[in-house]
Image (cartoon, rainbow, N blue to C red):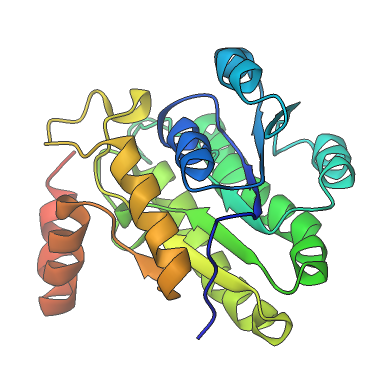
Length: 246
């Protein structure tokens, strides 16, 4: 079983300017990471954290949909042990009734193609460090679509399949590939959802625990744990319940 302790390792986090991403940066520092590359389209909100840890936090501007920026960040971060693909986006809107392809393409570009670009760029880098790890932040909606977020669900389903494919392809280079499937988390993206929400810090804690134990599929909050339990009992019933959520 592949495992990895975060102490003295180098971590890169996408979408690190707020929410779960910022919690990953803070938790990695707390656990003794040697360096954290904190990336986002704007890193202004991380300036204080970087100033307090000038030798351990490196801020890099990154749009994961921009191949030139992905390549530039990969060139600047050749010492990465752990890539955390956290950047994501959601737009909402029904498929037929909304009749608006643009937000669905945006979700797929970021949540699937952007994640894939980062994995392709960093797989050789973590291999050179002995295997390392790639962590993809997905969603329970990638396991069974929610009617109120069909485009987001489809993009996360693509991310789920991508994660499985990467796990198989990168096993021979000893890279641990982890899929993380949160339920509602207390972030800006989920603020409109009428559910109890777990904290971003709890997600980061569960993920770093999973790296240490080699757990490949992470359900980091009570909602996601119960969701996948019900999905395994009766997937069709969960599908119908989710379909009524629009």
